[in-house]
Image 1 (cartoon, rainbow, N blue to C red):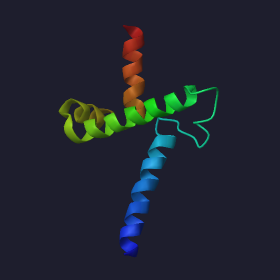
Image 2 (cartoon, one colour):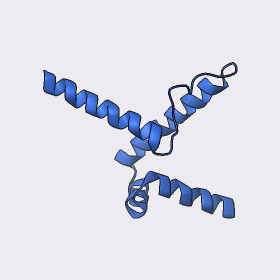
Image 3 (cartoon, rainbow, N blue to C red):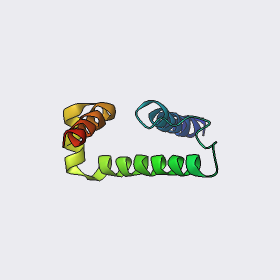
Image 4 (cartoon, rainbow, N blue to C red):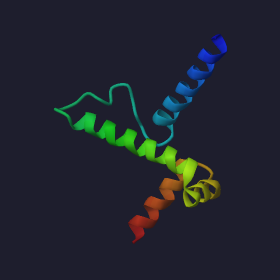
Length: 86
């Protein structure tokens, strides 16, 4: 039973670590702000995170890009550079 709890705790910590430190920039106070703007941005960020998780599991092109660039942060910086250039 304790092993299952530790496994769940590890998965939650890895997920929260990704959301906080690897390009999504979610903080504890993200939901505070004027009216509902911050909460909407929070939901959009979570939606993007979920799509990225689905792509990592199912999309071959996304998997190839992740393999080539190594980190998500570098991959999205490169994509932003290309979009800015265009």
